[in-house]
Image (cartoon, rainbow, N blue to C red; front, side, top):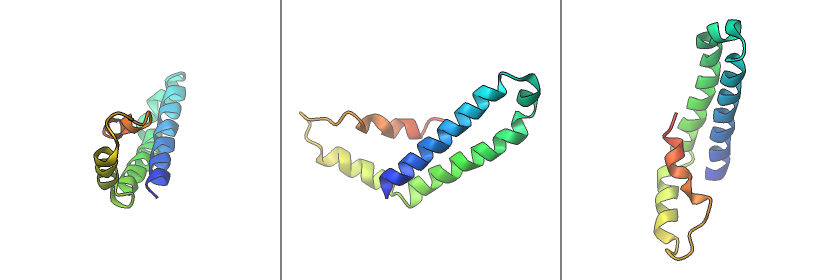
Length: 86
């Protein structure tokens, strides 16, 4: 469940970034970004809220850090800080 919510958040964030990048190419689209971007921000915020509440993010990441052997770090576990970035 955690990984699905994590993927949903990553997908929503990527869609936001892609849409903003496209809007920056067109002055008219960029002018309308506060309105059109709100939909993308809502999707990102909803996905993040689901990850935090239903995905038990803090519990999962805390457990993963506690139970991981120090000499064998997993390469994809550096994700926790990225969630807090906007």
